[in-house]
Length: 201
Image (cartoon, rainbow, N blue to C red; front, top):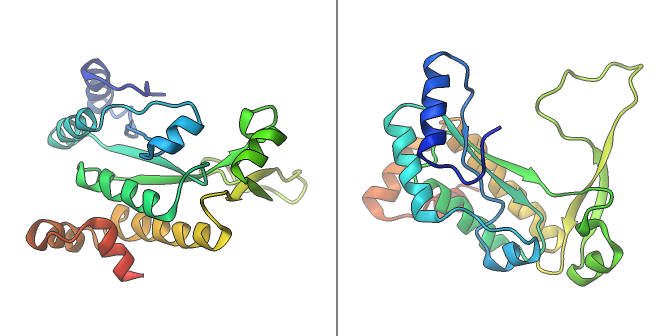
């Protein structure tokens, strides 16, 4: 796995691995761009300007990258999440944005009753969402996880709306279906990426 605070040394390592067909892409991830969210989850992101410089470096070297955001973190809103998607695209992340649903894990701070009450966290039990696995056979025991679908700042309808926006960006931009249209609109008319996909929906 790649270090969260990526740097030139990590870039050189990835360049070497890519040259030998041993890399599926470098991780350049954020949980959120919201200062409120980052404070609530005790995280610090890499500097946004540094992120943009790294994206330029990886893109100019034709090295694949992907960035992750987490949907459902306490303090997040539809608007702050939409802005985060837009900022990733503005920085040059046109390869792959992966939106991961927030899971409440056993013994984690977010799963503690006081923390959940403070941030209005509500969860639903859902089959575990894992992109890197063999589909389960009938004899296997299914796994489930607790997914955050509502917080004090994001109602369940807002969560659904945010999920729709994130799916649209992942589908139409990351898969390339409307990527060039969105990039053209951004540079030619100043239409922000999040606005492009909001209008599409």
